[in-house]
Length: 156
Image 1: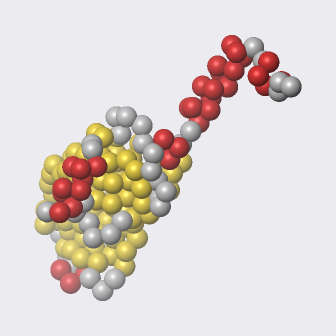
Image 2: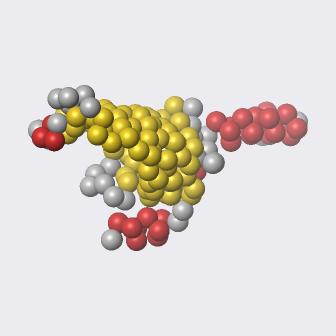
């Protein structure tokens, strides 16, 4: 006995299959995504006591990232620990809120998880012992890399 699904016109199934493929999250395809990102970062450093700007500059930065879709974390090869993220409409959002004895950091970073993997972010860091506040904003792009490139950077 054949199920009705198999008796349907195959041409009617093509849009359904396409919709299923387009709605699949990145996790359906794989567990990890490795990216090499290049950023242009605008930074302004201010003395917290005098409000005087001590530095205003733009720097170029690079990062190697490992995105773990199962654990919902992202690890920068230069960082000691991974950060959690939220995923909505193929946009990964990382919210950083740190407040310890030395530093207070509030930042929001975003990465579009579809090529060309654009990225952007803003934030403010207060370095308490230095009486400095640093605000930053950046934009950049990422490209997919092999896991071995990221693993090699971790060993350095």
